[in-house]
Image 1 (cartoon, helix red, strand yellow):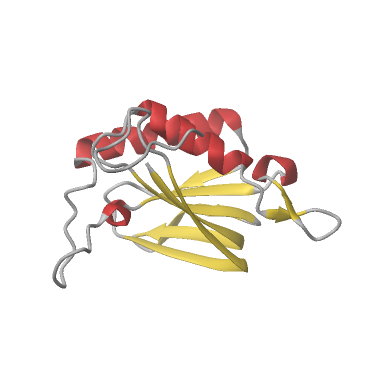
Image 2 (cartoon, rainbow, N blue to C red; image 1 turned 45 degrees about the horizontal axis):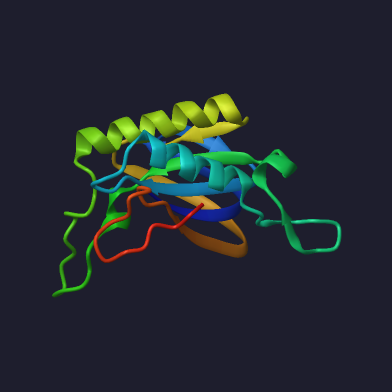
Length: 159
């Protein structure tokens, strides 16, 4: 699973002109399930997002997590993060999970997030969304969690 996190002062997502999810200060995370991902990867990515230290402590060092600062979490599904851009000028989305699997994994991650943290808001899988945010820092990080068995040609991270 892939999470592109951005530390924000505020963020919201609209569908058909209506705001369906909004947070104040916290993290806005674009989320993508890849072909071999399962609920395990969704849960591991969520734990990393909640515990990743991207907020400043009293000394100005990035030592605090979203949990530490009780910030908002806005999860936005975005399958295009899995794009293969290695050839030509048009991306291939074959590395992404099929839509039904991607939707299930996003909903699972969202459900787990709502049990583990508050506030949590979300975009809508498969919808044409307008995402607005004010990036704080700017801090933008790519976090990827692979299945424990790894993928051909890639080492499986231990964390």
